[in-house]
Length: 283
Image 1 (tube, rainbow, N blue to C red):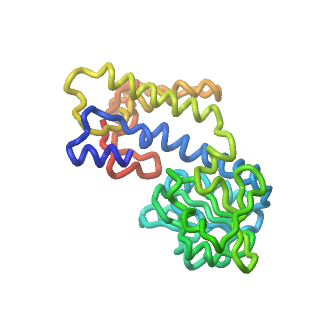
Image 2: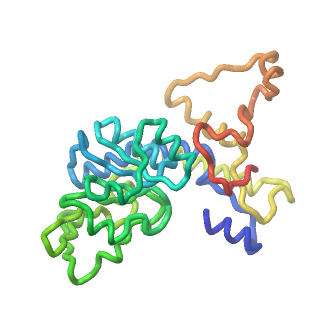
Image 3: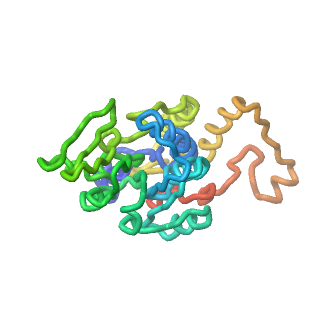
């Protein structure tokens, strides 16, 4: 999606585009709830690690980072968070996590999990200072977060111990466990819950339908978020799975709130606890 915004800013986007990744039914479910489960699934399948008492640093406290931290905390891990955004950092503090710089804890942590979507979040210098037996993995946007290329040097030995698990061995015998060669852990080493895939796929399908059926001129050659009403429709389609029953507003209540009884129920700027990308345009 970053490339789409860059193309739009440069005036090179030739068609309207829908930013599904920042829609509520993608961010709040696939990124948060799916990662809350798949982070543990991926780490357990590959390393059989026990998390009670382990020191873990999660780089990034966006939706993915929030899900990972919640799961790790529930199993008794000591969780640190790194952040560049003061709002996300404050959220992490209020959720009970220590916000630190990676260099402050690099020598003591047992696991590093990247969730930023950025590049070179974990550098060779930091990998050099990690302790023996540490685990490094990526839950972020791409395979750029861990500087894996810097590890492919003659002085380091790579030992494949099982599928998607490499021991990178330093000259002094220290081993760092690298998962999926820095690619996405949950896509490479675990399964993604089908229920969450259903929510995401429905959101994507409705985005295509909206763009296809929209009257001429509604969408310019720009990047948009899915209309709030459609996000709500995606959610409503999945409520029967839980035998959930929505409360209906009375005419008086709807008038008091200034809402249509059938939605949308929140204004476009409402963020459902966490922030949507500042670059996102509400449709």
